[in-house]
Each structure stands twice: as structure tokens, then as C-alpha cells.
Length: 422
View 1: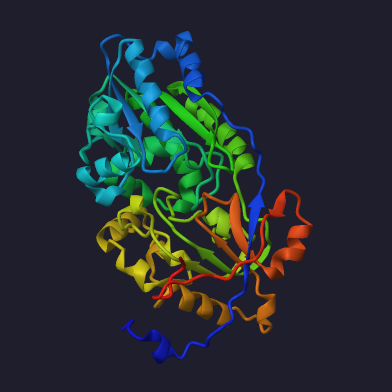
View 2: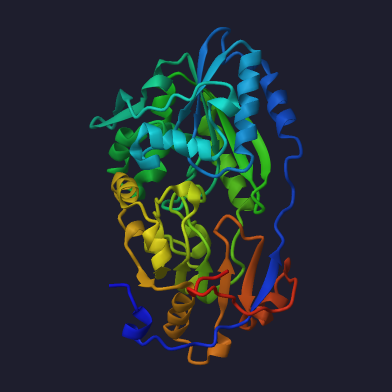
């Protein structure tokens, strides 16, 4: 079906615009010494008291590409050992990694987190324990090995979620409920719908905190440069009170595209390590309640290697390519979306035979009659927005923006012999 599309579709050859390199300045503060920040907090009596000598400690780590995650986990392990704990790592990622123990361990290893690098076991299992009920008819599940530990330490980034708005979105509470719930627990909670998650996540997390050995939460905040801004270690009983404040703070550092309207956005890659939705809907404006930026056509060029073929989020694009389509592991992707109950992210967009054709189709269908006025942006992914490329039509807007600078001469889009961006 996808062979010789150019001939069959009679796609018009379009003079694609030259692209200017642009730098965007964000709040540049970052945490200079991650190790010192964690060590200082572990010296606090309340934090130390959560880990007893000779106790087993499960460290829950998820599937996101968090800045300096390997270092953060490594230092947490060292501090737990110092106070006499016996740590091991458990993947806390719901149905990611193909909803298999091997797949989830592989995801952690892609971040450099494994027994060889961390010096402690990685215990990956999809087995859970039914802990208690949420609103009578929904059983809250919890990783079996974490439940049997003497203490659980949850490590996660705090950020805006891509599918719902609330005082608590993506972070410690979501990892407690969805991540450590594994495939079974995540499926049950997602049946309640994203529209209710602003209540479900904090309420279910509080129940699990009260009924499991959760001891500490390690909350990571990032800036727009994907650098660690701060790390807060919270006793379990303070998570529900403190996390809304951290979520609000995280949103202040969240990067964005500085334009209200675009004709075409080309995204080099999407992936589960970038966002739970593959691409951050807060960034591209395809989330309920988000009205900017308004983007006519979105193109997705590739899937990150760390996603292992899970192209969740491809359905939020308008166009993709044959190369990207061939990389999709449909079983992994479909398991993920069925668990979440949201099928929009896995719909297959128009499939072009190359990047060049994808861009030509996007420009041709942009409803912009004067192609010289096309507002086109190319980004690496929705986590990396400090540098990107823009077409000439956006230069007048950039001149009016503070902290957005053109940093080089325009260049033509270069394609290889198969029509893919080089």
C-alpha cells in the first residue's frame, strides 16, 4: 500500500523553506551538586528513621528519561546502605516495557540502571498484591516484591501530566498508584478515566501510603534545559501535602514553544522516555484545556531507541513516515494504550514515504496559500526545546520575543537519497 506513494498520490513538489537555527533561553538555575543535596537530606533524623538497620528497601524507578536519573538512584542507594538498609530496585512503570518483567528491566537498563552499575539487585516482576479497595469496587494493586520489603523509596520527576490537570499530576503519587500497580493495577485505575484522575491519583496514593511500606519519596524537579533544579526527599506522610506545591513549582520551569500559531511542526522523535504520551501534549497544544500553540500539521519522524517500538503518541500526529511505521512494536504499543483506556494516541496518521514527502504534504495541506508565509518549526523532541529551527516567516515574531534568538544563517533542509532528513 505504501509503495510508490509519490506517483500514486501525485503529491506536489513544494519548495520547502530554509530553516534558521534558534536558541530559547529558560530559567537557567540548576542544582550544582546532586550528591551533596541528597546526602544532606539523608542526615536529617526524620529521613534516616524511615530506614531501619538490616531492613530490605525497595527503590522504585520508572520509565521516563529523567535528567541524571542514574546518578540520583546511585546516591540514594549509597545513603540507604550507610544507614544500614539493604536496597534493591523494582521497576515502577505500570504496563510499559511490553508489560513484561524482562521488558521493564530492559527499560531500566537503557537508562544505565542495572545490577552491574548500581551494585544491588534489580527485581523485576509483574506480580502484584491486592492491598485495599478504592471506593469499594476498585482494588489497589502493588508490586509484590516492594510490598514484602520493609520500606519502599519512590524516585520520580514531578511534572505536568499530558492527559489531565490537577493539583497532583505526574510524580510520586502517580508512581505509587500506577507505576507500582504494574499492569494489573494500572489497568484497574485507568478504567476510572483520565477525567477523574485529578481526584483518583491523590486519593488512591494516600490509601496506598497508609497500607504499604512506602517510606520516602525522592522528588526531582527539572528546568527547560532538562537539568535537575532540585531534589526533595519526603517522608511518606508528607507526600500528599507537599507534592501539589512541587507540581506547581515544576510547571514554572516547564519549557514551551514560544509561538501561538504554526502551520507545520516537525518532531524528530517521540518516545516513552520523553513523555508518557510519547510527546508532551502541553507543549504541542493537543491536550484538553490547552489552546496554544495551535498547530495545523504535526509530523513525527522517528521513535526513540529507548521506547523499544512503543510509539504511543503517534496518533497525536497528522503525518508520519514508512521508516517510523516499520519501527513500531504494535503489541507493546497496544498493551500500553489498552491499559490507559485512551486509544487516541495509537491511531496511525497519514504515512508518507519519506520525510521530504511528509513535509511537502504538510505544507500542501496547511491552508496557507502563500508558501513563503509558512510558519514551520523543527524540534528534536518535546523535552529538548532550548534549540530548534524555524522558517523565515517566524522571524518577525522572534524579534518581539524576549529570550528567543536566531543564532545562525539559514540552511536548506538536507535529505538523503531516500528522502529522509540527514
